[in-house]
Structures are given as C-alpha cells and as structure tokens.
Length: 291
Image 1 (cartoon, rainbow, N blue to C red):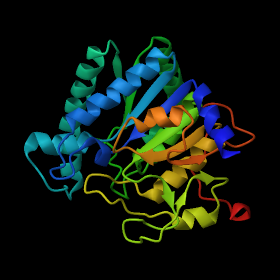
Image 2: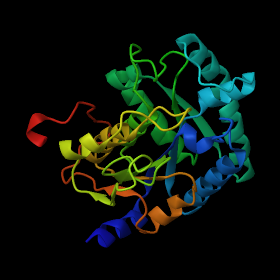
Image 3: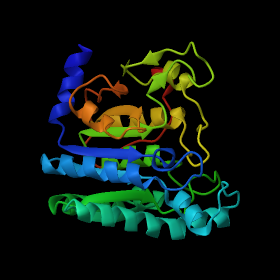
C-alpha cells in the first residue's frame, strides 16, 4: 500500500521544495556550501526539464549575511539578524541567479510577510504572481522578508519558520507536493541523535497529537530555526490543502530524485481526502477532536 502511495509522487506537477540553512551551509563554519547549492539548482533545472513547475523556499539569508561580515557565531539581537538578512538575501539571490543562468533557468525572488497571507487582496495578488512566474517558466525562490519580520523572534508577527512558510506557499499555489529537506532522515519516535533506540517512521497516516508529541521544538543546527514540531505543523497545513508531503534528509539533494521516483526515502504524509481549494489554509493547532 505504501509503495503505491509513493509511486503516485511520479505524477506530481507543481512542487514546492524547502531547504533549510543547515542544508545550505558548511557545519564547521556556517558559510554557504556552494557545491551543494549548485547540485540543488541542477536538480531543480532537471525537474523543470521534465515539464514540472518548481518553487524553492530557501533559508540562508542570515547565514549569508554572517558570511559577508565574517561573523561566525549566531547573532543574538533582532537588529543584527535583520541587518544580516538585508545583506545576505541579496548575496543568496545572486548565487541562485548565477547558478540558474548556467542551467538556462530564470530565478525570481519572492519575499513574503505574514501580512501578505492574512490580507485577502495581498494574498490574491501573491497567488497571481506565482501563477504568472510559473507560466513563464521561472523558478520562484521564496523567503520570509526577515528585514521586517524576523522569524526567530517570538514577539515579531511572522510565519515562525520556513517550514510553515513553505506549507503556506504550497497551499497558496495549489501545489501537488511539498518536500521538506532537513538535517534528519524524517520523523522518528524520538531524536535519533540522542536516543539510539529511536525508530524511523516512514508513513504518517494523520497528524495526531501522538506524532506532534514526538516533534522537537529545537533545531540541531546553529543556523536553522525549524525543529521537527515545525515540520509536523507544516505537514498539517500542506496536506489539508491537498498536497502530499515528504520530510527527507537534505544532506544529499539527489534525494529529491529518489522521492520523485517513488523510492522509500523520508517520511511521507498523504494529502487529506477532502482537500481545500488552492489559496486557503489554516495554521491553528490540532483541534481537540483530532487529538
């Protein structure tokens, strides 16, 4: 049964891929891993060559800004993070545009804030922009506008992390599939880095409280912000809107091909049986009757 569900991923046409800071940077220094980014762009370009529409939700702006200033430790203040994001987002997009051009692709920057999603007019305009970019054959590269809404700061009104942002984007554009590339193979019964007895979960039938309790609030990286609990929250948003979702290890970006070929890589969550219309989504906690 799981093999059948996995094989259905081959037919997905509109795909959102989220990659986190920890998957884009060198663990020793926190600086951008250009080799891995180049491989990622090659994968996205090949997906475009197959006729698929691809949206990339990319973290890494603050990490790129740190690299620009030679600041090797994680910033603490809001002002520092916003300043690093302002410089780093430009540098990150320069890298994406240069590499995309080498594969005859066009990268388009899309910076979102939570206000864009909660305002009906702004959300409609954003949806139209995505549709037109995809029609033109561009690869939209999405990030939260950290210079005005820094996701790591709890008192700033924001998406919270790019896992949730990618799920909201998937819902907004009516994506068929959301792939979250993380620093872990998928969902486990506990953190495998601290518990060797943790068991891997290949298929999640529903996002119940049992699975949410397995999630971790913290990230194991000095550059990332989204732990497993954030990915499970993203899974609910994406699958409730009609997209399948896979959480997989982004250490080797070729895992995207394994997923698209139906191989058992990562943790899969099947879309809801009664998907919502494109452009609608919810970010609320699990209702009591679903716990």
